[in-house]
Length: 461
Figure 1 (cartoon, rainbow, N blue to C red):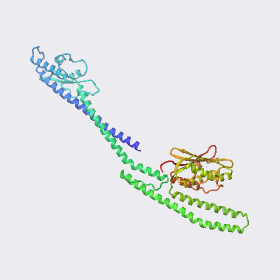
Figure 2 (figure 1 turned 60 degrees about the vertical axis):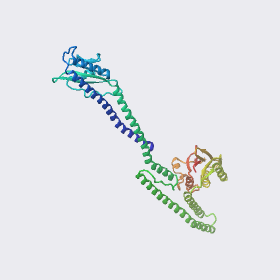
Figure 3 (figure 1 turned 45 degrees about the vertical axis):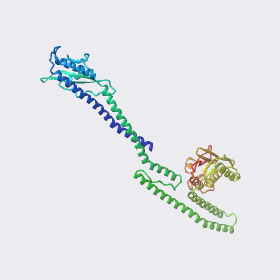
Figure 4 (figure 1 turned 180 degrees about the vertical axis):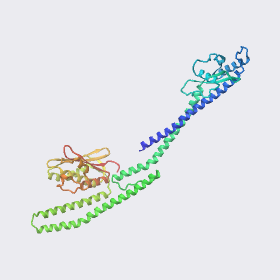
């Protein structure tokens, strides 16, 4: 979420800065040109005042013409600006340098034609820093209300473009500094806003993994997220209370039912002594009673597994698994099933008692459903941050729909209802593993059979 929110804020801030910077840069360029235009207008107005008194057909000895020519020459030598005074018929009154004439087309001719209409060049075309153009300004020379001549200046724009570029560099530096400050502020802002979200996400994952004691520390962030964190903690407290009540009820009910059930089974056995040997009804009642007793024992084990905290230790998973394989080998041999173990030494953090119980349930399940003369393999391996115990059998296996439901409480495949079991063994296994940060997964073992993978963490006790 941070990687999505931060670029969005940066793009928005960049758009705002560009929206402010581009008009400001254009304003700086316009202001620089306007200053030059005002200066050129003042200069052309001064030359027009001198040219106003020059006769229409001046002689070579006309003092006013000499003064005007001297001013234009000095102006060109000092500022490098070409200037000239031209009659209405485009002949030269005075100019500097001597190569400056009116062209048939171009900016100079356009400015001259505009001044003939008694208009000064107040708004020449904008010159940008990347251009190498000149700035032309013209002013009319008016005598007795008529335009008798035009003063034209053709200025180089190098200095003006340099000043404009310098102003743009200052604006760009300011924009970069503002962007850096904005990015820093955005980092702080997104961190402040998303920190409670990250904590909430982490706590939610911990609760979903079985660590129901986890809670969100309400410390910082917007008020809405702090209220959400408090509400989440209240919800977690209520859920934990409900689950605790459920566990207590299951444990109490299982415990309370065992005594009368034991007494009932005892009376059935006494009654069986008075009946003929091999009575099918009594045998059926005894079998169902023992099955009910097994279900109550499994319910009590499940309630204890979900309630008990794991005692994590650095455990040799290979040695523990080999021990469980050896313990179940006689049972497998009696059923005609080969039980093989590949258990190299590998360490992980686990509760040895809980892991042993989980492996017992998985191996028992594999041996139970594997036909005679088939093989059950138990393999221990280290895979990155986890150690795995894979139990693969050659039984009938499960369909995709059954694989999605395996491990649910009291669920058993419709094809295996005649096999002894309560449907709680794998649920107990999952609860035992989850308490220590472990997990259990199910998959197909080709060409047929079930593969169960028990995983426990190798680090981070």
